[in-house]
Length: 356
Image (tube, rainbow, N blue to C red):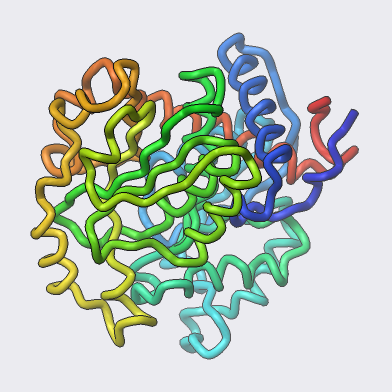
C-alpha cells in the first residue's frame, strides 16, 4: 500500500519523524540502492522539479541531490543566491539585491514540486538559529515540501545516510555503541548541525550513543534533551564524556568531527569570537582519531565522517584510508537516503511510492 504519512511533508529535522517513519525511509533507501546497482529504473518523480538554493559551497550534497533527482526521473535546479535575488527574512532585505523569503517560496511553489536549502555560517553572520529560521520560513510559505540540506541546527539528510551506513555494517542498531566525538581542526568555521543531527538519529533508532567533546564545546541543550528522550523511547542510551579515549573504549562506530563553540557565536556572544574559539580549539589538539585511539574500540569498529575531513588534524591518513573506514559508503548513502526522502515526500500521485 502507498504510505500517505510522507506526502507533502517537509524534511527539516528528524525530530519531526517517528522511529517507524525513519526506518521506513531507511528501508526504501535500501531498496532504491539495490535498484540503482542493478540498473533498474525507479522514476518515481518523473517530470518533477526540485529547486536547490545553496548559500554555501557543496560537493556531496549538491551532487547527491542532482544525481538523485535525475535517477528518479526529475530535474534539480541549482540556484545560487549570488545570481538570483537572494532570499532574505523580513527586515533583512536590501533593495534590488534580495527578495523576501515569503515571496520566493510562493513563486517557486507555483513552478515545481520541492525546495531544498543549504544555509549556515557566514551567510547568516554565524547567528545560531537564524539559518534554521530561514528554512522554516520557506516551509511556512511554500505548499510543497521543503528539504533541509543543512542549516545551523540540523543536517538531517547526512544523519539519515549515517544511520543507513550503520545498519548496513552491523545489520542492527541494538547494542551498537555510536560515538559522536569532537576532533581538532585548524578551522573554527564548523557548524553544530552534523553532530546534533547524528546523535538524534542514532538515539532515535536505538543505538547506545556517546557524545564526546572537551569542556566548552557543548551542543545545544534542546538537542541534548531531545536525544536523551529519543534514546529512552527507543531502548538505547545517551551519555556525554569529556574524554575521547574513554568514549572510544568498546565503540562500534566512531565519528570524530570538529564543531564550533556555541558560547563564542551569537546570540550568546555579541559577535563571532574567532580568536577565543581558536584558542579553545588549539588547547585540544590531541583530540585526533589515530590508530592508538581506534585500538581502544571494538575490533570491528567503523570510522565515519561526513566529509570533507581535515586530514592530519581530525583524523590520520592511516585511519581514514584504512580497513575500518566506511566514509565513502557513507558518502554514497547520501544519494540513496535522499532519493527515498524526495520520492516519499514529493510524489503527488497516490501519496508516494509503494513502500509496503
